[in-house]
Every structure is written in C-alpha cells, then in structure tokens.
Amino acid sequence: MKFDARTPGALHGSAASQNMGSGRQPILQKTLKTSIGCAGIGLHSGVRVSMKLYPAEPDTGIVFRRVDLVGGGAEIRATWANVTDSRMCTVLADQNGISVATVEHLMSAFCGLEIDNAIVEINGPEVPAMDGSAAPFAFLIECAGAVEQDAVRKALRITKSFSHATGDKMVALGSWAGGLRVDFTIDFRAAAIGRQSCSFMVERDVFKAEIARARTFGLLSDVTALREAGLARGGNLDNAIVVDGNRILNEEGLRHAHEFVHHKALDAIGDLYLSGHPIIGHFVGRCSSHADTATLMRKVLADPTGWELIDLYEDDTSLAAWAERDAMVAFG
Ligand SMILES: [Zn+2]
Image 1 (cartoon, rainbow, N blue to C red):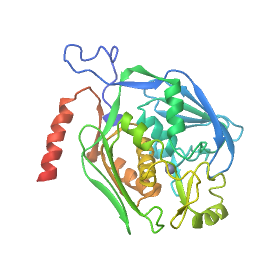
Image 2 (image 1 turned 90 degrees about the vertical axis):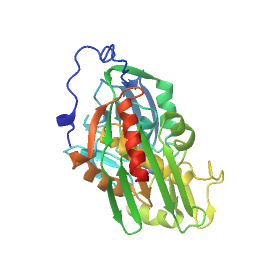
Image 3 (image 1 turned 180 degrees about the vertical axis):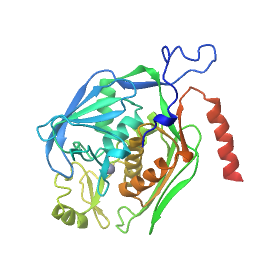
Image 4 (image 1 turned 30 degrees about the vertical axis):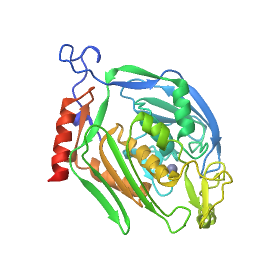
C-alpha cells in the first residue's frame, strides 16, 4: 500500500518556516543523532548477529539492510507490504526472499521513542533478542540521541472501525483523539499468567516506564514443539520468561506484576509501526497474536476510506475536534 495518493504536497521551503504566522507549530520528524550498535543472538534462529543503527534522511522510515553475504546488501523497508510471516514473530523480506526476523521489539522502541527515520544494518537473519524486551533498544536509541529534521512528522489517523476475530481472539482498530491508545487482554490457562489487562496512551515516558522492559514469554510445554519446528533455538532464561503451570522458571521472577500483558502491548506497538507512521487510533487486542494484527492492518490499509495521512502539529485543534467527536460516539 502506497500512501502517495494522500501524502500532503511536497514541502516548499523549510518545514520549520511553514505556517509562520499561523501559530501552528509543526512537529518535526526525528532521526538518530549518531550511529550505535549492539550484538546478540536471534531468539528463533539462535544465530549470533551484529546490528548497527544509523541516522537516515527525512521520509526514509525504518529500513533494514542485510550486510552479510547471504543478504548481499539487500534493503528491506519496515512496512506491512514486506511482512512475509507473522506466526511466531514478525518477519520482513524483499522480493528476492532476503529476510529479517523478529523486528517487532526494535520497531516498538523506534515507535515509543518517536524515531521516524533510521537505517538498521544487520549481518544475519534476525534482530538480536537481547533480554527479550525493547529496553536494550530504547537504551541504544537514547545513547545515540535524537535530532529533529527539516520535515513535518506525519501520522496515520484512523477514521473508521476495523476488527478481525477468530475463536477467542480479537483485534480491533478505531478512531481515537490525539495519539495511539492500546488496550490488551490475555487469558492463559497457565496459572502463573492467568488473565491480565492493560490500557495505555502510548507516549514516550509511558513507553519507557511501563512497556519497554516487559520481556517476551513462553510456556515450557511449547518449547520442545517450537524447537522441533526450528524456532526458539536462541531462546533461554536470559531472553525470555518461561512458564510451567503456576511456576516462573526464571530465578529472578518477573520485572512487574503485569509483565506478560505489557509485552503483548509492546509487540502490538512494534507491529503497528509497520504502517510507516505513528498511528492515531485505538487498538484493542484480546488474546491476539502477530498474525491477527497483520490481518487487521492489511484490512485497514486496503480501505483508504478508513484512514488519512496527516501532518502533525503541536496542540492541534483539529485533533481536539476529533476528541469531541470521539466523546459523542462513546456516549451516543
Ligand atoms: Zn514480543
């Protein structure tokens, strides 16, 4: 899906000088101030990889670049059009099948820390798992620092309600004023997880404090099956919470009481950022997976009457008008 048809006209003059005198301050796109790298093993492949994040030009978005021999320098844009697998994690690939797996935690950190443009160089098939959360990536991004660019930040504002359900699983995306709201509920038979819910307005401070540190998790009973399927080869107690019934096998226990459901919110935020822009809308996930979010987002992007690409401004009065409309919908 291309956004070009709805992309506001090309900028004339600097973004910062636009709308001078109108009192509307544009929110500018951001990239990294400098490059920064890390290394680790992939959760599913078990392959050791090095990864380096670089600044990128305005309107680049997030682009992965495989720099190993197998990838041959292939560039893969982090967009839904390039998602080829969503079963256990989110996998991006180019038209030649060169892929990068488990992009969602890094994408979540880019979204949470409001980085629009970056090149991610990687010398293997999967983003390193690090500790299983987005916190190490958020730390890297903060160490590199962010810099504003001479282009207005855009957002995908959802204007209709979309949903997708299979059995007990449900995902939905509707309109919401002024940002991205994420509500998530999980319900596991394993007593150590059980039923948990969370609700966030995804803002930088909330992301860092409540979401980024939540680690990925798995059931001990699933680990053997996953390994037989060639997945979770790099998974261990250093990069995932492992649950067996009412027991948490990690000696250190949980980072906070709702770590499981907060991780599901983290995943959803990363996947939603594959829209190429921050989303202004209300996402609801109930026992849903990467694949459900992928199906939902394909439905959304296939219906251009249900969203619009807008330029973002500080204290946007049009968003305030939408807040009123949302309130009327809620009570009407
Ligand atoms: Zn995850």
